[in-house]
Length: 167
Image 1: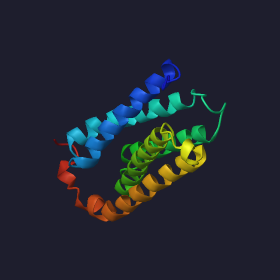
Image 2: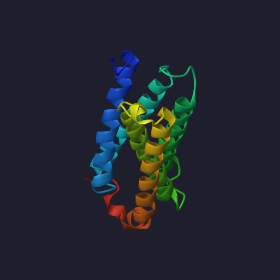
Image 3: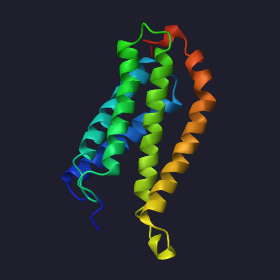
C-alpha cells in the first residue's frame, strides 16, 4: 500500500512531521525567547507549505472538505504569525497570536489523528470512514480547546516583555 500517493503527498507528510515537531517544541518551551521565534518560524513555514501541498493532493476528492480545512488551517497560522508582525501596537496582539498558533497546532493534531485512524482496519467492525474521521477530529479539537482555554490567561499574561527578543 502506497501511503503517500505521490511525491507531493510524501512532501506534504514530511512537512506535517516537521510542523508537529517544531510546534511541539514551541508549545513546551519558554515563550517569547529567541529560540521560540526561530523554531516558531520553522513551524509557520512548514505549516504554510504543508497546507499549500494539501491543496494539490486529490486522493479522495477533486476539491473537497479536506481542502477546505487546509485553507482554514492556512488562515489560522497566518493569523497567528501576522499578529505579532503587524499588530504589535494593539493591546491584544499576544492573545491573537496565541489563539491563531494554538488552534493551528490543534488542527494539525486533529488532521494527524484523522489521517492515522482511517488507516486502521475499522471498516470490518462496521465503522464508516466519516465516523472515524469526524470522531478523531472532534476528540482532538475538544481536548485541544480545553487546554487552550485552560492555559490562555496564564500564558498570555505571564510572558515577560524582557524575554521577547532574548534567548
